[in-house]
Length: 222
Image 1 (cartoon, rainbow, N blue to C red):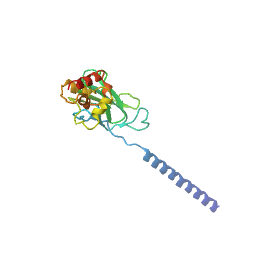
Image 2 (tube, rainbow, N blue to C red; image 1 turned 120 degrees about the vertical axis):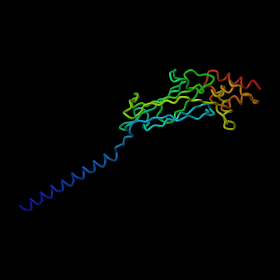
Image 3 (tube, rainbow, N blue to C red; image 1 turned 45 degrees about the vertical axis):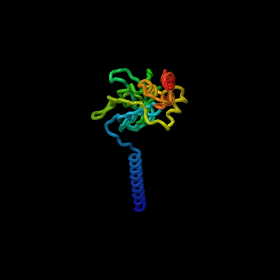
Image 4 (cartoon, rainbow, N blue to C red; image 1 turned 180 degrees about the vertical axis):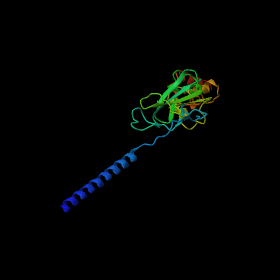
């Protein structure tokens, strides 16, 4: 009788030890997969480079603690979604260009402009960035957080120091003059090499409706 009771006690003790082990294993597993919150969302736009790139493009860098992933990819990741960056001439004016992105660096070219002009991206004076959730809905920031940022007073200049970097050859191959190239023509920058100098300021020529004409005017006047 004593042996039977002792066997039962030993069995219950083994069950108790097993239950404790399973609980600890589950707790450990949950802790290792949990994702810490980034806190209230923050967003800031870094001042862009004063000069456009040699291909006439502009890179907007957005600083945020928001986890950036393509739409529908956030899963259980908190504070996660995408960016929308808008370029404007004035804060209350129409958008010149709009892009959604899942990276902190968003690149624009003159081809992205809603209404391309000879001055290309140099007409941009205001940059706005907004956070969106995983379902592409505008983020409603919690207390102490922010869901958008705006940078005004932006003043962009044509590309410079592009000689020897393929700027001129790329411009010629693209058939016409980039937005920055067209601006160089408008400013009356003298050149002794005709079209090569006109295209040297930026290479994405076909991105403006009158890009080719601008390139030709630069090349035609020695």
